[in-house]
Amino acid sequence: MSESESRKLYFGKFPIDQRQVFYETENIIGIVNISPILPDHVLVIPKSTSPMGAKDKFYDMTPELVSELYLAVHTIQRAIKDNRKITDFNIAMQDGRSAGQSVPHVHVHILPRTGGEFTPPDKVHASIQDAKMGPDGDNSSAADSIRIPRRVGEEGMKIMAAEADEYRGWFMESKLGGGGITNKIEEIKEKYADKLMKSVKEYKKGGKKTRKAKNNKKKGKRTRSSNRK
Image (tube, rainbow, N blue to C red; front, side, top):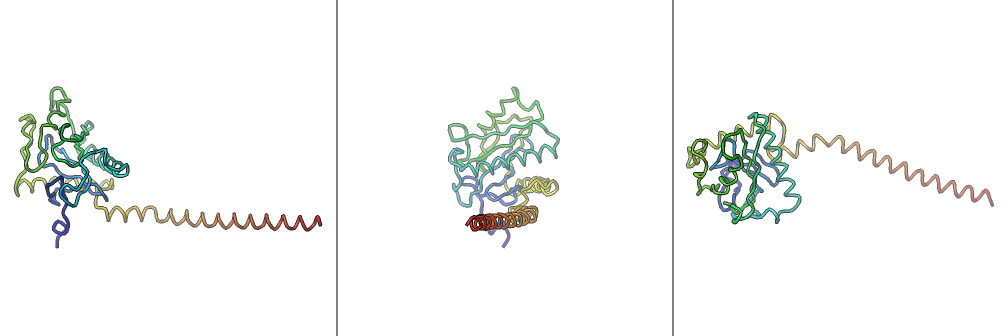
């Protein structure tokens, strides 16, 4: 059984094809966008293994999950910057339907900006709000001159899979992380195992010295006491 068959991930109620996933930690994934507004417009979301299983509101997330989410955003942004030579970005979130959230699942948009895409530049937020990011939506609100057609069907998936493969390679080459949680854990273990063992040995050694000093101090007190007698 392939990895894509052995587990299911969801964005709101929509199943995510494993070929869309280019970044992964224990609780967070980065996915290629079905309806991007700009080139390299990607989404970063908390993992969900059941339909509507993730938090739909940012304020309902735990501080630990928030930290992991935005560390992933930061890592992915850096990778895009280094590989596309782009220095300006919109990092955006719509938190709730009234705020323009199209899929009830916490998600962060990363949009690289080169300039001139929207006039004024912050008009991009209206386009994000109007666009439908789910497989049943579209991005027709984006300007025709820059809009990327929705990727649908197997042909669309091939395009997204090629993008995800390229992005995945960035993390493997740069060692920024996100190449898979198992690999990441092993990398961390290997990196810090020696330091951890050294610290444990030093701690134990220090403890022995402290206990020995205390015992000597006690013996010294008894000896001085007996001498006075």
